[in-house]
Every structure is written in C-alpha cells, then in structure tokens.
Length: 260
Ligand code: PGA
Image (cartoon, rainbow, N blue to C red):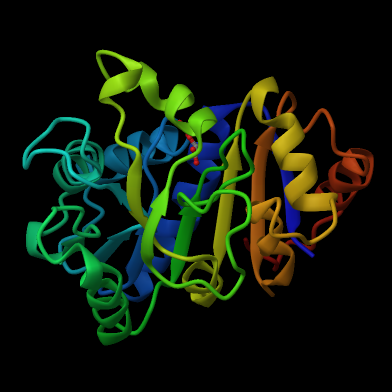
C-alpha cells in the first residue's frame, strides 16, 4: 500500500518532497521528473526553486507534464505549457528543450496521445511522478470511468472539474471542455508516485483513493495498484482517512534508513 505521510502543511510537504527530488537529481542529473499543474504542487516547486538558487542543478533533467487543455490558443497563460514554464522550467532552471507537455493544439489531435507516449518511452519513463487529486477523484485529467489501462489520450472534463478550474479563467465558459492527459496506465508506469493533497475539500477524494475500493469510479484509487506510492497530505486532507492514527504511528517508527 501507499505510505501516507501526514504533515503540517504545504511548506512541510514542499521540504519533504524536495529533499527527495534533490537527492535523485544529484545521483542522476538526467532524471525524468513527472510534473503536475494546479495549486497543489506549488509548494514543492517553490522549495525546489529555492534549492536551485543555492546551486542544485536541473539543467540536465527532463520533465513530462501530466496533461494539457485542448484548443487554447498558443501562449495562453493558462495552457499547461505556459503554467509549467512559469512554475517549473524557469524557476528551477530546466532546459526548455527538456520539458514536455502534451500537445493540445487542434492540428493532429488524433495522434497527440501516441506521440506523447512515444516521447515518454524514448526517455525511459518517469522516475518520480508528482500528482494532485481532483475533487472528482481524478489524477491527471482521468475523470471517473477512466480505464486503469488507459494511455495518453483526449478526454472530456467533468463539469465539476471545469467549475473547480474556473478560478484560473475569466469565466466558466472559457474553461476548455477537452484535454489531453496521460492515462492511468501511463501514470502507473512511473517508478515512484508522490500524491499530494491539502485542505478539507480533498479529504473525501483522498480517503476514497487511498482506502476505498479500487474502482474506475475513483481514478485516484489506481495508486493502490502501484508498488511505490507516497501520499503526502495535511491534517485537513487526511481527516477522512480511517487509518490516520496508524499512518502517524508508522511515520513515528519509520526506520532511519528508509527514505521516501
Ligand atoms: P489543484 O488540482 O491542485 O488545483 O487542487 C488538483 C487536480 O485537479 O488534480
């Protein structure tokens, strides 16, 4: 099962996960980092940017984003290519040519998934995949009903996800209806999954993903099928976990040699 670490908040999570990522990139400078968008991973990016300003080098590392909206004009500030550029590529000092985001442009949209899978394959897959979770239980943009075997493809966003993401746009109507997202099968190929969630609004989705039945109705529950998962949550996001006391106990007794 997943290791569940209940931390004080975003900053503590940012330090914990950054320590681990910095360790990886120091051992293997050309590591492949799977990056997520949304508010959740921002404390990790902020901390990694701080480490970069103190000399940690990401210039040989590679990044692959989970997903992208379909049909936003090139350069749109809320396209995930632009978000990743702002939050990751520039502050962490990645080489722009090493940063991959699914192509959500209208041309060749039928083959965009296949092309992304080929690029992932060519780079040997993702070493560590950062994940948020949506209130619908989605990871990436795999909405309820997504196949556990799915690969990168075009999906239709739920109305709930569009409403959740409307805060980034001028209005709900501006939120795209379609996206390209790594599939659950793609995500499960990453060597280590690190799922982050903060706040009460995520508590139900976290409990369903971590402890609920494995079901396509809760795409995040796919993490239960992966051999190496770390779930990092604050107390509010952990508040519906039935075994929270056990997770805290296990953390307090974590062997010193055992990293993330
Ligand atoms: P959030 O989104 O980090 O902005 O809450 C998470 C997600 O939708 O996966």
